Image (cartoon, rainbow, N blue to C red; front, top):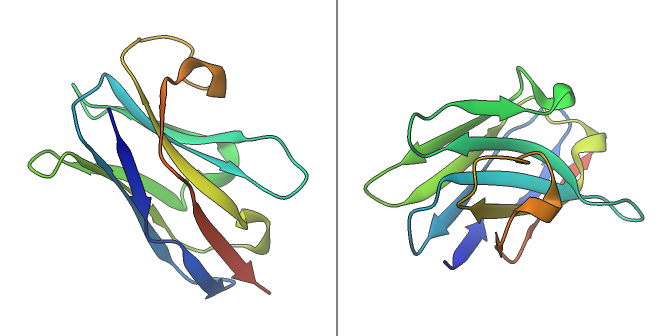
Length: 120
């Protein structure tokens, strides 16, 4: 499965961005992770394709929304009320196994990353 992420950019604090991740095939789950400079890659959100159920990291709950377009095999991450601490490279990922979904180690397929910069 190949993943193509897009939609990053520079935005002021309080602004919004929408990231997209187009997949070449269908998997059990698609997720978003992010990596800030000097930090480890961390979980942001994931969605199961089967029932659209989603899970979010606590710091993004209420601000970020993950959604999908079945026809386009694409997952989106709508990011609202952005904060400077959201600045990172965002990666989409996919896997076919139904466990360990919060861990970077679980995901077999990764997109190339897209930079999100939030200025204060």
